[in-house]
Image (cartoon, rainbow, N blue to C red; front, side, top):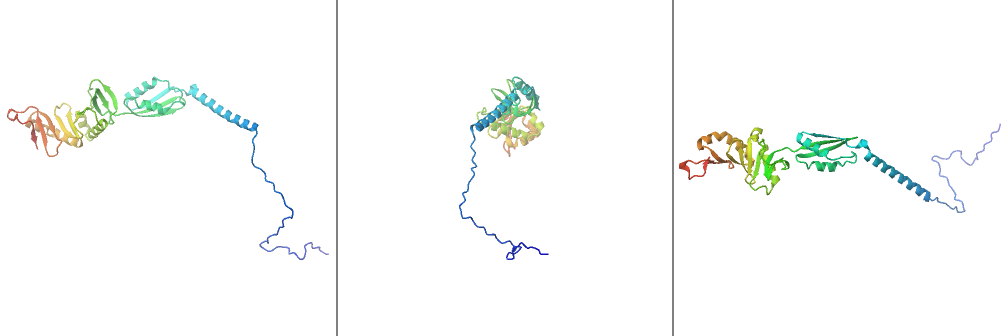
Length: 290
């Protein structure tokens, strides 16, 4: 039976590996190529549709905003004040009770904080919105340190900020700080340096101080409770000077009698001025004890 082979004898059945490159012939006549334009031109209807969608979006956003700021459920109905000072807590509650705080979303916490820290005795305020209708206020009070006299008696903290004012000096444990320059210069610096000197004292000794007078940049005149003696010392060694004074007071009283002032500002000597001089020593104004 004969088998017909349709493959020409002059052409191999398989090409060499790798495959040979095929030759292509460009036709003789020219072919005109057409490029499709990708530029889209919107019609008036499309532009109106897009504008309408944008306007609808912003109108809905505006309506939602006005609904939120006018919703009764989002009105501030309760203010929660937290503070370690009962006076500061009561003062803030009384201040906020005078105003209608309005919507909790629209309430400007930065503006409200700037108003609250102006209140006497308030050092720092943290505000928090608790949805839907609670405003939380955490107030940090100023710590009283000294009384000063500027027209009236003012209770101040370590920064010199006024906490309270009084017509007469209250009878409590805070010392009265006086300035020989009547507070005309370096007010806050003097307050800070005095507070630093007091911080180096033991609490029991610090509680005994009734009056401190600033003589110059580093000199202090101190009086203790129930003691008329004026103790002159420098702010850098105030603790050592007061300890030495209290330990030597009995001996000095026996030797010199009542004393007007004692100067402890020098390291190698002490100046003592008796309150009343003896007749045989009336010409001497001061006694020196080494």
